[in-house]
Length: 396
Image (cartoon, rainbow, N blue to C red):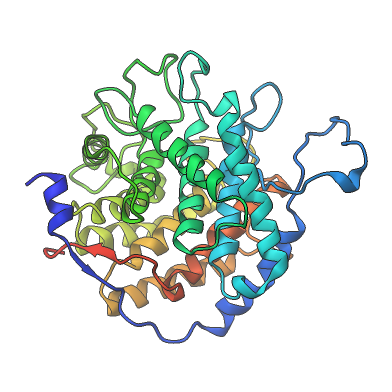
């Protein structure tokens, strides 16, 4: 059966009812919101001159800071992606409608994310962007998810309706235009020339598949062939042992000894595939078991210098990405199993919370925005009223 038929045949049901949000989670989210609001910035690097009249600077961004630079600056895709992740977490947290400071901050972020479509470093046109290592897709993916979330929540800032509609169309088109030819999916470490096939990255493909599904469920047309190829790429990366390869061109070598370094992409891949009718509760439970068993491999690299380091080639930025998708995976399980897995993952998250009340995967203070937003978004997910029902395949 084709992917389209599987998804069409899926039984759409609302998630099971939840008990009240635990006080510890509610307090952590409430404590995080003002910290995120206080760190919204008018981006500039050390040595950049301040805008004329500091008070006039528009505080609109939460850039994700890693080690990669373009011309000595944080890549535009990281700026758009990081801003979108934080803004969406603020939007979807309890009490948004009654919080003027949050609404104002999200409105400024929305203006930045929609204006970014005119930035050449975000262009999907190969005549404009000729880079090899390519992080535009993080901005395309999370920019789309944030703007669709605004649209679904009927929370688009006044006067920005046309800009949001235009930007959603741009980000959706950009993702579909930048898929890897013939292989399917997406990757941030691409060979020069967007027209050239290269290995697909499950780390990037899984959240992009989720972005396309969210856009489609919100009423936007997507190219189903693009989605089919992306899902095929994810399935090609998943091996017999459950190990998900770092990158694949269609054939992946099974390396069960490397599962500790793959746990983040394992839970992300199973989450995306489940929502496309290509996974099941046993696969999700397996990935979660390995995540809980081996999360120390991620912890060994959290807030450390460098990127991919042996023995598992784990980079610090896998940490909260992994935990976010672990909780998303748990939420797809039947209630009894879901609650048990969530409790274990949430307990770990509270052990790695920094003394200042934030969560940070890097040595850079800026990156606490990303870690904190990814964490509170995942913590609050079961109590967030779904704007659309999620697919739960009949055979799952």
